[in-house]
Length: 77
Image 1: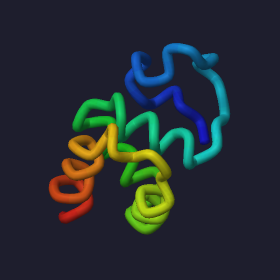
Image 2 (image 1 turned 90 degrees about the vertical axis):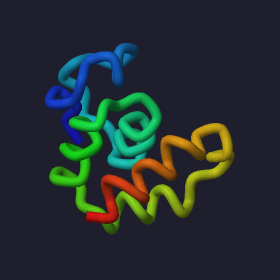
Image 3 (image 1 turned 135 degrees about the vertical axis):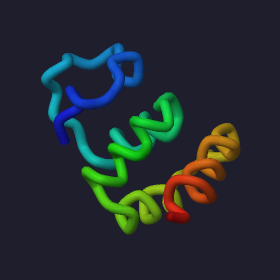
Image 4 (image 1 turned 180 degrees about the vertical axis):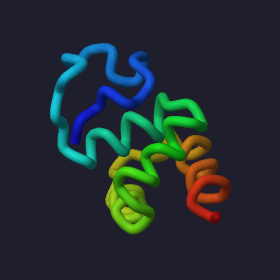
């Protein structure tokens, strides 16, 4: 998945033209993205894939607040 449409700070360590696996993009956007990035993520990937990645996310306790926000606010629509 192309990352150029997301805020640059999310993927600061990647080439701006990088094509990353959707799982990586989802985790990075949930963890470091702004609300606009999260909304864009849903438009680009879809709710079902995001829920699938969240459900399989190991060691996600560190990001509970980010994940909860994504589930309750962005995905609840």
